Length: 327
Ligand SMILES: [Zn+2]
Image 1: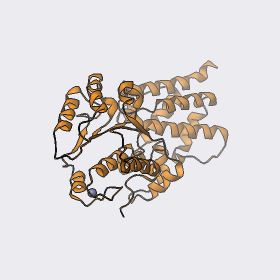
Image 2 (image 1 turned 90 degrees about the vertical axis):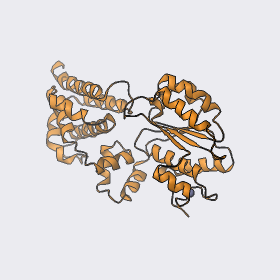
Image 3 (image 1 turned 120 degrees about the vertical axis):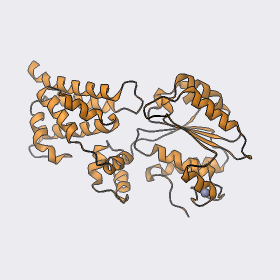
Image 4 (image 1 turned 90 degrees about the horizontal axis):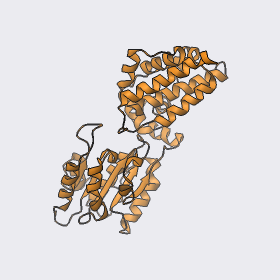
């Protein structure tokens, strides 16, 4: 009996997909999406391996057959991964032609599995050249498109895929899972910083994400209405998917500090300066800014560069801070 291949909050979805598989009704094109950091890639990985695994009885990959060993080593000839050459870059039409070519090569009747991630980074030409393959994948091949921003995919691509959509897991499942990770200390702390996304929390903990410069930038913009060069640099060092939840956590604490004299905080070490900045800003303006942050949590392939977006968020914080002079 092998262990669950996916995160616990994905188990129901996993069983449904395995049910389709054993009934021979697994769609040939799946679009796996979610807010990022919740294990979308983990699910795609487990499914790829399960499809290639040659142990006939296993619903989860057996982990011991030669196919599983090759998959884990990244050498399985029938596992095709299409990614941008550099993070944040596009997947061009050449890569999709290469993919189609590989899927069309026969490999002794074995089916191939391809994974395109992040799918929304395909150029329009790339997406268009994928349409025919999505409709009729060669042989028994399966295509997995993984995306944190599926709305950015052309409708023609989305409509040809069966959707598997994840949301943020509930806090308790996320915390339980984080507690079971060997390297994880302070799961609550990291889950807050990761905006509730457990796999992102794990990554941030592993790299010792330091929020202090981000909080400094926010406190300065909101409390004093100004932005310094260092504040721009602090944010530009991280993807927005990391920095924005940190700002949101800080603003939530600022709101708590406006409604109680000694509230429990998510960033207790920042109590003093968060309180000082909060006292200078209208509470409604804090709520508005929090809304803006929540709306702006971006994926990796936003049209604007991350440093420009970060600057925009700080500029809005500074404007929110300066608003006090207008009332
Ligand atoms: Zn196997």
